[in-house]
Image 1 (cartoon, helix red, strand yellow):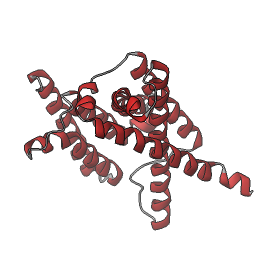
Image 2: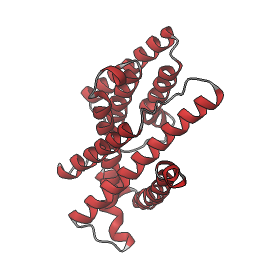
Image 3: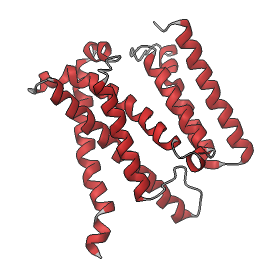
Image 4: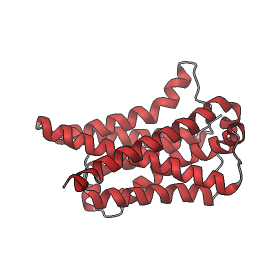
Length: 228
């Protein structure tokens, strides 16, 4: 059960996202508005599912982490992504660490059932690789958002800052994963053990995402130079 301080902090972070949403609407910033709405929806998802009688059962850490990552991302869309050099790095590290913590717990539970060793090296490799794959997928979504915006002459809801920024984002995605492994973050291990089928699905699905994202990334980033 969530503790009172944790619940209060989650509510405070969610209120912060709503405050960002209000500022974005007042400024007429469509991209910031859409991102704040999406961040708030993710931040309240665990609570909403609990109210509907379908608790996520991942403890207070998930809503707290979602709310914190959502607030940093939402604030970043108002300007810090452009004006504060470390803001994007911090946001990517925080978000990637959440993905990595979920994958890390799932790997510890699921790898033996898949005929693989759950030794520290293997678990670390799987965690970093699948987190990297999720990062590549996010970068591809940013590129797609930019392409859609240019195609229809509208402001993209996600901003792609170029290939150097993409490389830096992926580096800090890996940093987030390495921190989770190095600190042995097992906050989601209990839930992973209670739902071994979901853990297997996360690892297998993550592997598919990794393979698909890397192939798509190569087509997007390397393909044009090969054609040239």
